[in-house]
Image 1 (spheres, rainbow, N blue to C red):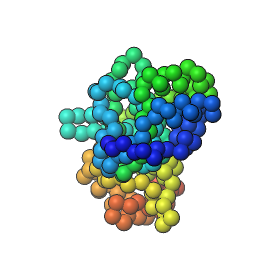
Image 2 (image 1 turned 45 degrees about the horizontal axis):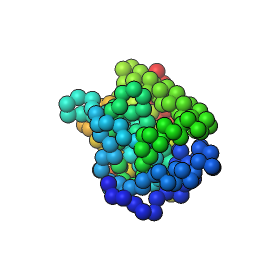
Image 3 (image 1 turned 120 degrees about the horizontal axis):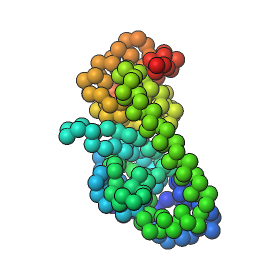
Image 4 (image 1 turned 180 degrees about the horizontal axis):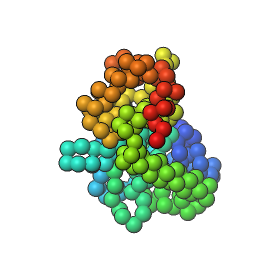
Length: 228
């Protein structure tokens, strides 16, 4: 990562939106801003927790080892989101890794100052707790889907979820740069299976493809595959 002197606008990220205005000067004094290249690791699973990251610009995948040669993407995060929070608690090691899917800008807050922020910003603490609760529900749902939902349903669910989170570009494609391998890691399957089932969805008229770009043409049809 490369230090970025400009930094964020102190109003867009998860922390700056929710902490008290009186606390913002302290955030400004303690934050470190970095530019992250596409494919660059922000932090690595198993390394010691040093702080929390907030995305100012860009998209990141949060992933962990699944097998020796495979990974499972547990979350996709966009501008404004928090990263590294899964390392909070008594265990001082990150349980996941985070990698940039495109060039991005992040702010880093060291763990000591972040803990002080929690103690003096009850609204931020409450919103973080609710965020954790939402993430827990989504994780449980994803684990249930991995065990019981057919792969085609998981792919359909992933595409609908990505559209809901990231929206679409001006020309209607999902507004995220996601490779087929990343989609496979996000849905807990293989590249070959994703390639085959995506072609099936194209033939059925549920989606359209242009290189990596994905266009959802029939969301209702995709939704039928997610019903268990």
